[in-house]
Amino acid sequence: MQEKTSPPDVPPNIRDITCMSAGLDGFLGRKGDGEPGVKTIW
Image (cartoon, one colour):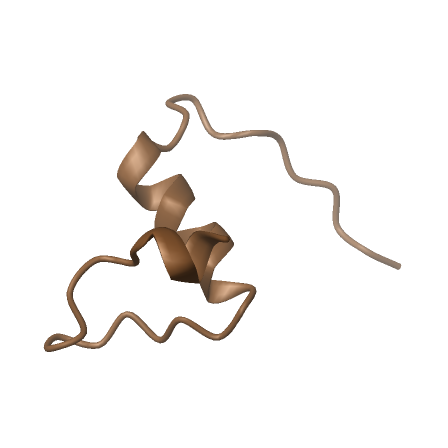
């Protein structure tokens, strides 16, 4: 049975959301990778 969790008190900022969504497509977010760009998000 899964434990139910409540949403965070503070929502993530736009940078974190962008990195999370880019991570779904394979963006690794390593130190030298920089920020995900338009092609990664597309």
